[in-house]
Structures are given as structure tokens and as C-alpha cells.
Image (cartoon, rainbow, N blue to C red; front, side):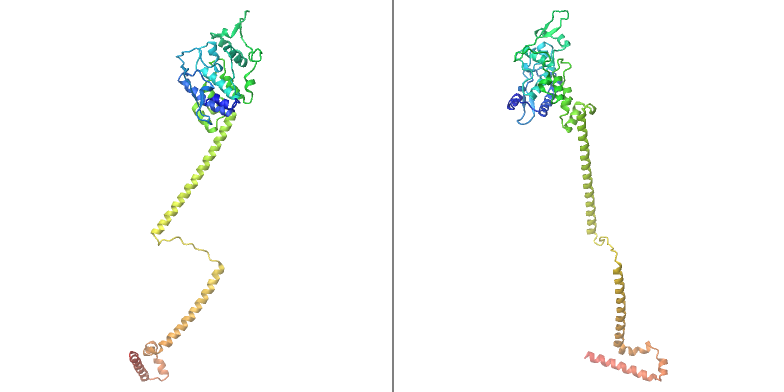
Length: 385
């Protein structure tokens, strides 16, 4: 589908500036490339611009059957009439600038929905152009070989050239600059009007070039900030050259992008710290599993004072109970071992003085020891039986 058919589907109501700008940027890139190769398309019009896909804004230029190199021109009369540059009609040597004139006509048509200069003949075409863009300057007419086809020379001393103006469809005679471009396009976007006017410059030498058009404010202000930065690098556009509104939007985007990068860096740092801590914990667990005796560090809890008092009283009770228990054990031990301790009692006690005091005879003690040994022997005999 070409752009003319696209307009027809839209009932020739035209498109908004955003869509037109997308088309314009692609066409400007193509014309810039053709200019670098010194190729003139010679027949740029909506019918020769195709949509790559339906419902998408990608386009491409077709029909290079009339195209030529700048230094190998074959035809002197080229381009479709509605999009024909004035230098072609005036017989002025043409360059790649004629394609920029066609581009200006196409941009206006895509906006208003119908051709900007729909001349019925060559003279009518020139009359329409002069009605909107005024008469051409003298320096352009000075190099024209066909100017007398569209102008008459006064017979007075000035010998000025007067344009031949035809009547419009209502039978009214057209006048130079009688219907300015702003009247036709409107004043919704003055930057768009300026873009079209500079493409429709009479002088091909001062007409907007593809490079300059890509730096125009109407193109720049419609670019998203991230695309604008890339656009600046490609076309060597410095930031001070940007319009104020475009520069403000660009700076806000860069500030927001910087904040997002800082947040991402902070998040990455937190993740890195968490990973390092996790690695440390894994190393600690691995060391404990290899050395079970090491164990984990013991935690000493502080004992409340009330508990300390209770523990002290409990310890005192335990000590007293332990003493009584030891006393009872000693007494039981003595009672149980009294009989067996008799044979050696003279080794443990000094009974000499006591025996003399109570008139105890040594013989009686010896007899007692002898009878005690016998009793032990009888007990062992009975235990063995």
C-alpha cells in the first residue's frame, strides 16, 4: 500500500504530526543517503512511497526509473506536476534539491489530505506556487532559461518582470502571496509550517537539505529522549543547539535514567553482601562438621539476683544436709566395724595409762584379744559351711 492509498483509506482527512514526523524522518534518511551517492530520485510522490507492513509506520521509496546521477542528467523535464520543483519549470540546472521540494509538498499533503499545488497545467502550477510562496527572487530569475513562459516584461524603463497569474476554479484571478502557506496549513504547529516553508524555498542553494532537516526543531521535538540522544550522535548535534523544550525533556530523561541506575547499583550491592554473608555461614558450618569438638560459641546469660539468692539458700541447705548425712554415715560405719576393730585397738588407742588408772591387767587384755580371734575363726568356719 502506498501513501496515496493510505490517505484514501482515511478519506483524505490527513494524519497527525506524530505519524507524519515518522514518515519524514525515514524519507530524510533515504534522501541523505541518495545525496551522498549523488543520486536524484526525480519522481518522489506519495504513490512511490510504500508502507512496509499494514498498521505500521515503516516505509520505503520505490520507482527509481527516472532517477539519475547528478553529473549524468538525461532528462530536462522530470517529476510529476504536483510535486515538480520550480527550477525544472524555469529551466534552471537541477540538483538533489528538487527531491527536497517534493518532500515539502508531500509533508503538507499528508497533513491537509490533498495536494498542495494541484496545477492543471504548467502555467497553472506556477501560478499556484506564486500565490502561496510569492514571486521568485531576482537571482533565481536571472539564471532561468524559461522565465518568459511565466512572466512578462514591462515596457517601461524598469523592465521588471511581472508574473502571469491565472484564474482559480471560482474564476478569481490569483495574486502573488494571495494565499500564504499558513492560511492553507493552519497555525496548529508553527514549527511544522517552518519546516515545510524551508523545503519550498525558491532558491535550491538555500533550500533545506536532508542533514539540516534532520536537525530541525520540528523533527527533534517529536523524538523520544533515548532516540534523541542517538540522533544527536549520528548527526553531530550539540546539546546547546537543541531547542529549549527539547533540551528540558532530554535533561529530565537523563536525570531519571541516572536515578534508575543508582537504584540498580544499590540493589546489586545488597545482593552481593547477602551472597558474601551466605558464603561465610556455609564456611562456618563446614568447619564445625569437620571439627565437631570445636562447637559453637557458648552464650552466657546473666542470672537475675532473685535466682542468685534462691541458689545460695539452696546451697546452704544442701551443705547442712550433707554434713548430717556424713555424720550418720560415720556413726553407722563405726557401729558396723566395732567388732572387727577390737583386735587392733591397742594400735589405735594408747591404753597404757587408762589400764593403769582402772587397774586393768595386761593379761586380761591379752585374753580378750585371744578370745576375739577365736570368735572370728568360728564365724569364718560357719560362713564357709
